[in-house]
Image 1 (spheres, rainbow, N blue to C red):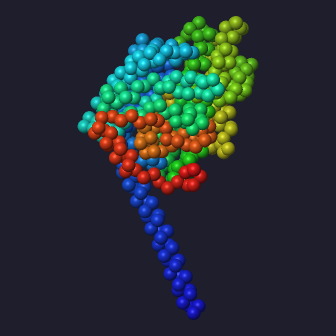
Image 2: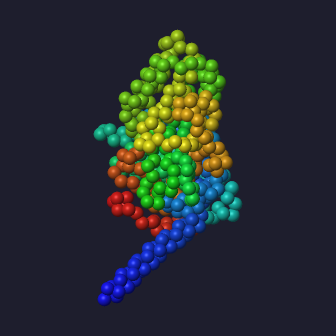
Length: 447
């Protein structure tokens, strides 16, 4: 009797082991199937000053959480001065007219359509397989009577879809705002898919993506393929960037262009009282609404106040500004729960030409490896277009892109609105979305 019960138990154990191995095998098959999917998508990111369009043609492998960039082509398309100036003036108005907005949308959409055609020409015969174009633009951020922000894009998706024939994804911040978020930042998860160390064997390095634009966007990208189980613990911080530095240069050196600030500042010394004052302004302000931090206006006012203090040398002011920005990076890393020991830096935006700032960051946080084109696979200084293309594929794969602890939204949501292209492209997009079955999620993620 005892022997019979023992045999029965061993049989059950064997069946359980078989079921477990079968489940693991099915999971491996799903990973292999997902890794074989390759899709084309175009990303267009309009600069904050409406001066240019950062365009990217992205060939990505995998779907959803297994997305990986395979091949990228990048182009920078300048926007005509008359259109850029009109957009800047309109965005700064307190009571803009609807008629002017419609005309501006049409003018800017024509520039977007030209950028799409130039990128589609690079794909040759594969242009018919292009899924969508994703657009990210500064837009307008009006505030209602209750102080709640909203977002209105400059892109006219129906016109763009008709011009190009492919489906359009735009209005990315709108869904996050509807879910209770600030509408910003919406790119950290896409940047994690692009820049993080997700080595299929052993991931070794956490990375810091420094995207220098009008403000400096700092994104901490943890290592490993942590998305298989739950969202990675990405952290984000916004600190003063190009707008702050350029105004300083104009104030301190009578209109010297920002490109000369690196050489000028290298000859100066750090003014402690200036750095302390700027730090107090940033630390005492909140996150702000949308991409506009609360410290922006007080900080710029303090810069304008310097013109009445001729005792500070221009070189000292520039050097102090770069040291202040480097200290912001150091402070951000110190706030992480587990600061990484072997951190890698990924320069983005205009950081590549800011040698003084890179040196100051090295002094502030210690020597770290600065990744180049060979490590990442494309030029990070034009990475906004690639990030936008990745956000487009995430929409097609029904993958939420906003992170609640960064935007303040109640639950993660799929971002963007999808406008159909011509019938053959729309059928392709529908089939692509219908064929994809998202992987099983944990209950706390699915709620």
